[in-house]
Amino acid sequence: MKPFRLNRASLDAIVANGEREFPYECCGFIIGNDAIEEVRPITNIQNRMHAADPAAHPRDARTAFLMEPKEHLAVLNEVDDRKLALKAVYHSHPDHDAYFSPTDRAQACSFDPNEPDYPDTAYIVLSIKAGKFARAAAFAWDSTRREFVEVTLEVG
Ligand SMILES: [Zn+2]
Picture (cartoon, rainbow, N blue to C red):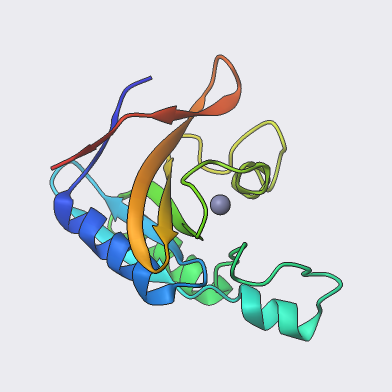
């Protein structure tokens, strides 16, 4: 599996997003191409959904994220319009390690449990402990093992 490369400015931006949203999860996208890379934070509406229907949404935003649908769609349209790639989906784990949880996997394969929605997109998880950045990890779909595996995250 090849490493995932992220610009320092992008890492700084998503770390700031994760620290700002603590104790709740942040979420968003990193879009771009070989020349450019841009971060698109998305509002996490998990608390709103949990408050409206706790039976359907038992978790609040401390342990889950749900992207605001209009903002989510706007990024997909932007990627399409500007002919960019969806390089990464990111979210944070407040007071938890940077691992790819069964929930993360299920969310990444929302249409088909054995196929990611975006097979060429990396998933970045940030561990934010006591409000401060602890670690970032990148995960990518291994089409042979048909599973997400951690890949080296190169920054710079
Ligand atoms: Zn997660």
